[in-house]
Length: 224
Image (cartoon, rainbow, N blue to C red; front, top):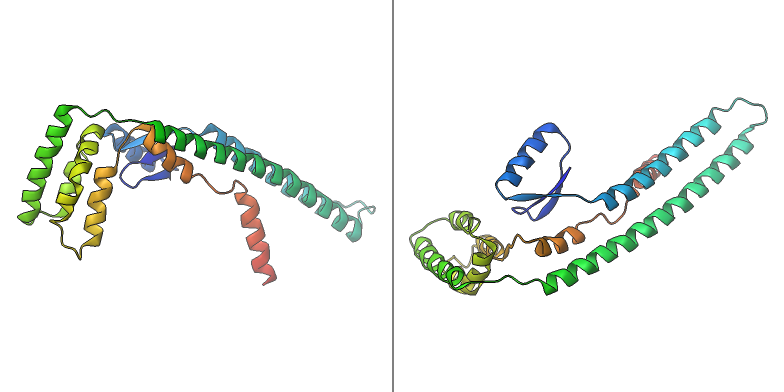
């Protein structure tokens, strides 16, 4: 199970029951959305199956007791198997990277074409919120409290509030760069599908050859 967490702006892998319970709570509160990426799962499955097949065949050769399988023959056969494994894995990797690039381009097009329709009520709500938030910041209210309130606004209201970002930020201490950025990101955080599609595409794994990478790293470490 995967989710996109609006709060962190990240894809999160859910691996156990407790994490799944917490993830469902976030989804129910509208703070996350479930991600289904069957293509990514298929590419990972193909890569893992090639790796597991190679390891199994390598073990079969190493454990072969036939006198025909001399050390030289075993070495030759293992090298052949590994070359075949790496060639087939490279094909899967190339297909995955082509898909990943296509997903990224399509997401960027959708994001560029996406529009958030802002009504007069949205603008009025945003203006009232901005006025109240400025007063609260002047009275010493923590930036985090304002950010929490921003999270309760709709996409449309947050979009309207973007026009008030300069007025809000000027009431946050210049030295509090983290607070300023946190508030700006909260206002800019729009939860529509087009907006998160780009972030999801950007966070897709660079490679699906995870098992190969781990094996190669382990072999390199052993060789020193």
